Amino acid sequence: MDERRNFVRLLGGGVVLAAGAAALATWWLHDDMPAAALEIWNGPGDEPDVRRRAIAYAVTAPSAYNHQPWRVDLREPDAIVLYCDRERLLPETDPFGRQVVIGQGAFLELLVMALAQQGVAASVQLWPQGELPADPRQWGHLPVARLRLAGGGTPDPLFSQVLRRRTPKQRFDTARPVSAELLQGVSAAVPNGGSLRADGTVEMARVLPLRRLCLAAARVEITTPNTARENLRLLRVGPEEILAHRDGFSLNDPALRVAVALGRFDREVPAREGSRAFERTLALYADQASTAMGFTWISTAGNSRTDQLNAGRAYLRQQLRATDLGLGMHPMSQPLEEFAEMAAHHAAAHEMLLGLPPPRDARSRTLQLLCRIGYPMALVPPAPRRPLGEFALA
Image (cartoon, rainbow, N blue to C red; front, side, top):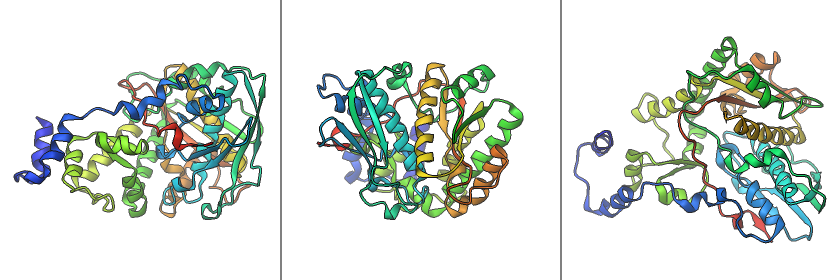
C-alpha cells in the first residue's frame, strides 16, 4: 500500500503514459539484486591462475563509495603491479585523493592475504616510481605497488572472514551495547606502533557528540551542490543499472525506480533542501549516525601517501576482525572529507578525537578513518562488484 501511494504521489495523481508501460513492467517484475552483480562473493571458483584467484578475493575490499578504483597488471611473470584507476577518482568529495589511496591499501592487504592463502609469499615494493603527487590531476600512470611472488606464504587467520565481510549501511541495534572487550578486539587487529594508531570508544559521553558530528557532516555533503551531484552520479537504481555498473550505491526504492523508468530522475539536480526527497536522504544518514554504538578511528603521524596506504591496510584488517566478532563496522567518511565546505567539521573531528588542529601538511598527525560499530538489525547483503576482467591487464 505504501509503494502504491508513493507511486501515485510521484506521478502527481496523473495517468501513466503508454510509452512508459514497458519500463514499468520491467521495474515491477525484476525487483531483486541481480545474482551476476554479486558473483565475485562466491569466490574464484575453478580459476587456475594463482594471481587471478588472489585478485578475485582482493576486489571484495572496501573502497570509498564502492567505486573500486583498482587496476592490476599481470604481464610480468611472477609479479603483480597495482595501479589506481584514474577514471574512478572522486574529485568533489575526495579532492586530494586520500580516500582513494586508502582504498588501494585495503586492496593491497587483501591481495597479500589471498596470495598467502595459496602458499605464495608477496614481497611488496610501494611506489616503484615514486609516491603519487598531492594533486590527483597530476597522478599520471604511476604504480602504487609492485608485488614479487615466491613460495612460502603463511595463511592469515583473518582470511576466513574475507567472503563474509560486509559494510552495513543500515541501523544498528541500540538495545545491544558493544562491550569494551569487543572494541579492544577490533583495535587489536592493528597493533599500535610507528606512524599508525588505532583507537576507539563505546562510552556514550563520547559517542553522542560523534553521532551529532557525523550527521551534521552528512548534511553538508548533501547540501553542497558539487558533492551532492557526485553522489547522485554513483547511484544505481534498480536491477538493470546495478548489473550494468556493479559499483556505487545500489538502491531498489520503488518510487525512485519508477522515476528512472519514466525518465524523471535527473542526477544533475540534487534534491532541494526541505523537499521530501532531501528529508528521506537525510533520514538515511540519521539512521546510521544515531544508532552508532561506538566508534573506531585510525590516525597516522603524517599524511603521506604511504601513511594513507597503511591506514587502508589497517582498516581492512579491523573490518575482518569485526566480522569475526559478529560486529558491523561502517566508515563515516563525511567528517574527514577535505572539500572547502566541510572544513569546520573536519577540524572538529581532529579536535574531538586527537586534541589537535586539522593537518597543515603531510607531516601533521591526521585522522584517516572514522567508523561506527554496532550490531546490524538485519542481514547485511554484499555490495556489487565489477567482473574480474575489468580489473586485470594480462
